[in-house]
Amino acid sequence: MALGKRRQKQTSFWVETSQLQARGRHPFYGRLNEILDRAKFDAYTERICRKYYAKTMGRPSLAPGVYFRCFLMGYFEGIDSERGMAYRVSDSLSLREFLGLSLEEQTPDHSTLSKTRRLMSLGTHKAVFRWALKWLAAEGLLSGKNLGVDATTLEANAALKSIVRRDNGASYDEHVTELMNTEGIEEATPAQRQRFDRKRKKSLSNRDWVNPHDREARITKMKDGRTHLAYKAEHAVDLETGAVVALTVQPADRGDTASLPATLAEAGCAVTEMAGQAAQAEAVGPVETVSAVGVERVVADKGYHSKQALQDLAEVGVRTAIAEPDRKRQKWSGQSAAQAAVYANRRRLDTQIAQALMRRRGELMERSFAHLYDTGGMRRVHLRGMNNIAKRALIHAAAFNLSLILRQMLGVGTARQAADRLAALCFAFLRLVHAAKSALLATGPRWRTTRATNTHCRHQWPSRQNATLSTGC
Image 1 (cartoon, one colour):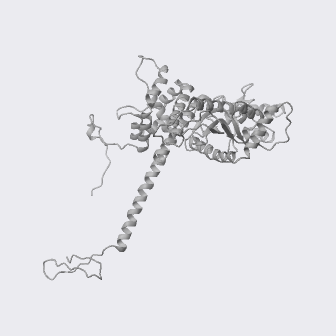
Image 2: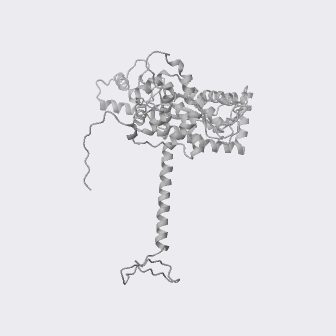
Image 3: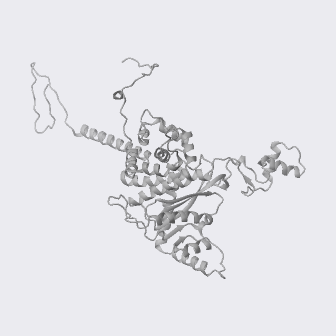
């Protein structure tokens, strides 16, 4: 066999379609497209996005269905930036088919994705998220009766060393130099400035400092103990199915009790809008109907415990199972309503139902955080501004909810899990083949040959004691 060499070839001007290699359809994205087509996703997105485009001016832009599919793909592939999405789509034939683009059509560039994102409002992205929730209810995977609430931090696309003073716009080094000048230290070197800053008592307050490139990012302590500019993403999760019912992005320095009303308001509106909706006949989930009375119970950790929060939830008829922190003896003079709400919450915490919901919340909340931000590629955001991050996070959450349907149908929720399942199936088949060959060699027939005395083959049949066969040739 001769050595093959790679040579430069001149591309043909015309290529017959019969000569093109047939591309295999991706089983995961093919099934996802079936769900989207059955729910008429493209017609819905074009209807809600029609107001952003002119009727007859200019060439046709990126279709809304293609735009939202790119962000859905970003979740399933774990891609953290729009540049990465654009490159991944241009490099894959199966993703071209998922987007509905032929080989002659150009895939969307990262600038096209970013311009389209800025063009569409946050309300449009919320509408797509609600559409996924409605389809989830139709598949029997949304109850809305018991909700768990928790929050996590997302590292902002802004450096802490770039912060400036809110009052005079001075940088951190300029501020330290000014403090040294007030103590009589003139023309300090960088080493002297570092030693002075290390010894002084300091604190970075969001009231005094801001990043000029992302003014909505806040200085906060991350889960791993580091200090960064960050945002806060808060989830409301259905404790029966694990679906994300509501998602809000808020400043990272906002307390849990202050951010809870916005998230519960979004969740309450979503569940009330679909209250009493029955699942379709061929639903894949176990839930028959969405809660007819809306949200009935809220489960959260001790960071959400406060008199006012418990009283507000009790006034609207929502029962709470919020862990109570260790506090001193409370004074309830003139706070009878808050006292009744706190004591009722304390009694419910000792019940078996509340304890089971607490365990369920710990499992499902962390699962949604891990899928959306760790494997989903959004733990450190590549966008700036609260609205931009919320747009991306909402489509991520919609993809997470759609993955619950796919998990019921296929047993996997992402494309990588589908690839791992296929690889495991292939290895299992190879192991079975190897085991069968080993068993055949150990107990199978042995062939014995004898040389004939003449030119013709003489068949010698074995005796009953010998189970081997021979043709005699």
